Image 1 (cartoon, rainbow, N blue to C red):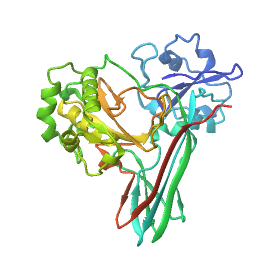
Image 2 (cartoon, rainbow, N blue to C red):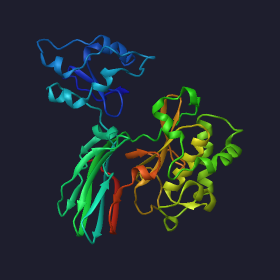
Image 3 (cartoon, rainbow, N blue to C red):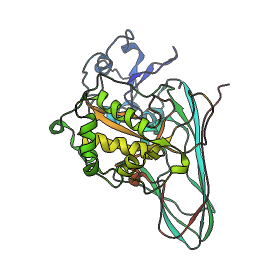
Image 4 (cartoon, rainbow, N blue to C red):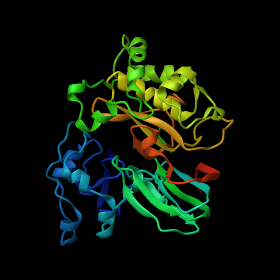
Length: 369
């Protein structure tokens, strides 16, 4: 959560970011200094003189509380403070200048011998919706009806019926990004199972590609005597990073975490599955993530671009990003979907024979002019 930067002296308002999607708008004159707690800004809210639009555009600020200076904003009001509602009401909203913009997209070409239903998980995750400069509309050639829905994990999904013959499915978007690397929090502690939020418990259980029953003894033998919390998850990542040899020639869509451990080869999803399984065995909730991850901030040579797989682990009171494949904080991640493992976030699930004729992914930093 932070104040929007580069605010104009002409504006009477500042936008205060609560998370990647939600904002609180506060009047500029309530901010006496940059050290003032955000909660104080909320308490000192004053409506602009003569404005009746505020009542409908700005939710109640009751329910905010501060854990400390610049503490987190909590309560229903934070969840309702969505930036476009203020813009629609005509207020002069300002937003921070993003450190970088990323062009992301893909093109997939299928050949289907007969009409074939498909489920698609190809959109940028809703947590990054406010960062979309150009929306990632999924287009098909030939054009077919596309129905959108949310799955059980909150991911944006689509369904189509591909006609017999050749179909192209593609999108391109531009995303604002902070340019900051993944958060590193060595002080993050492990939460006892009895104190975990209910919504995290499903990520302690075995799943299609993460066999906790087969890997439990291995996990406790390798990591049980070591430190807990962040250090334990990092130890898992260090081991998996060394244990698996990366190579696209090793890709196999049926490979599980146990098989990746036994075979010692794989691609990014195999690194993620093995690390997730180990974390779950060690009573740390872990979930699979898929999305775009370019080469920004890394030295050449660069390999072929593809969608990336990583994972998130619950430590303390939040989810943290980990990447056993790269095993270093990266910049420019653009999340698409989360789930128990890759089965829940398959890019496409087809219900009939088909051939994937072509597959292209791009993730590039947009040059600044």
